[in-house]
Image (cartoon, rainbow, N blue to C red; front, top):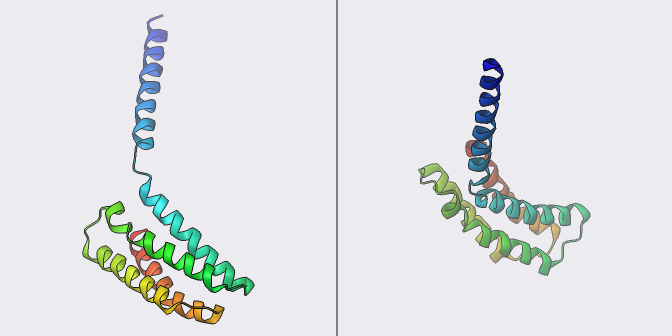
Length: 129
């Protein structure tokens, strides 16, 4: 009888501990993932446009501006002050601004404009992902 009570007590403590851990994991900040997901969506749309050779200037500009806007959220969202991360985030913002200003109207121009952006993304993801 005593052993059964101790087993039951252990199970109850385990369930309570598990629920506390699950609550702590659920309470973490979802914003960094949301920023990356949003940027991935817009990059995906631009890559799909190039793949299908349907590069409408207005659509391209829309996605480039959304990428540029979302990139400004990287530093405050991730809250990292490591020099390499800050430099990569700033470089991404600069390269997205350059891509948006160049206003690519063809798939070839879009590919040229996105190449430095993709290199910056890859550099950061290789280090911090």
